[in-house]
Image 1 (cartoon, rainbow, N blue to C red):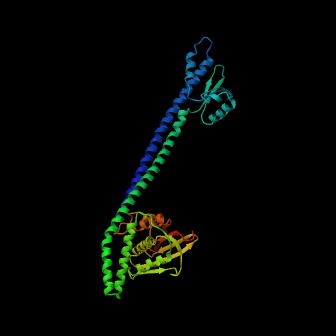
Image 2 (image 1 turned 180 degrees about the vertical axis):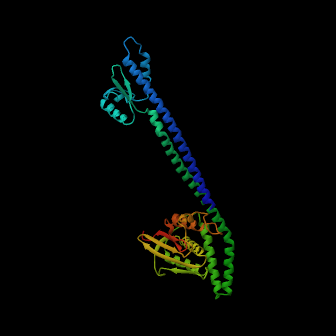
Amino acid sequence: MNIYRNRSRGQFFLFFFAITIGVGSLIYTQFLVRSLKTEERKKVEIWAEATRLIDAADSTQNLDFLLTIMENNNTVPVILTDGNDNVLAARNFDPGRIRDTAFIGMKLHKIKGSKDPIIIRLPGGETHKIYYKDSIILSQLIYYPFVQLGLIVVFIIMSFVALSSSRKAEQNRVWVGMSKETAHQLGTPTTSLSGWVEILQANYPDNPVTKELELDVKRLEKVTERFSRIGSIPSLTKENIVTLIQNSVDYLKTRSSTKVLFVLAFSPEEEIMAPVNSALFEWVIENVCKNAIDAMEGNGEVTIRVMEDGRNAIVDISDTGKGIPKSAYKKIFVPGFTTKKRGWGLGLSLAKRIIEEYHHGKIFVKSSEIGKGSTIRIMMRNGRA
């Protein structure tokens, strides 16, 4: 639970930090855009005034200063028209098309819909108009925060992927190391127990307890082998999963409470072939069944159904336990997540890894109802795929 909560908190902080930067940048950029718009408007107004003075000047006046003002506007695209919007001159558009009347006419039409013109009143009552559009710098500045926000989103996604990959790699190293050490620790006592069982079999060959002890020791040997192979890619062979499920249930029956009823909704003679690693697949069945028994607190019914759907082999394991809230459908497969007072919360996460990574199948909560029970579904390719 703590691992899951800390990861969510870290992701939320990263998301909040990135959004804060993006919103702050957007607000500040909008402030700069408004300031630059005002400056460009003033520049065009000065250009308009210079145009008016030149038109009103007589031949004796020095117009060099006014012409310099007009020449200094080399960023804001402007179009000068008469009172009837006939184009008289244009400036700061594509140099190769500045004399293209159709091109300038199209630009004038676009500008009319976005900005009010600046009116130049000339002597004699005649008027000219100056239409202008945002400079290239201003246009780029308007879109800059959105580009920046996009880059931040890409950064967040890449960070999440990197964190997830790093965390997954770290979990893999921990799991492999822990599994190898567990296999090593189990090896010696298991070998010793196997020797004691042989002595008991020699002295008490008809004792049913001896037979059960032998089954338990074989199971310990199988568990030790499972742990020792974690981290390596298991080999898959075509097996009858009905038989494997039957074996797992037979083992669990004698080691579960008499208040737990196992219902096998399939025929033991049925044959559903699928490429599996039998030891790991049985481990998954046992883990899911044990979780079902825990959810029922040792009193209830576990129903197992096996079927085929086209190319898929499907196993449904249902219980009559306390149910799973929808918010926890995915969490129960996260390493470290557990609702029990005891345990590491690795059972279902290992089951998910075995089914999805090694068998290329799926395991998920098919359905659940609080207070009535849950159904876990396992789907894998069958032998016909």
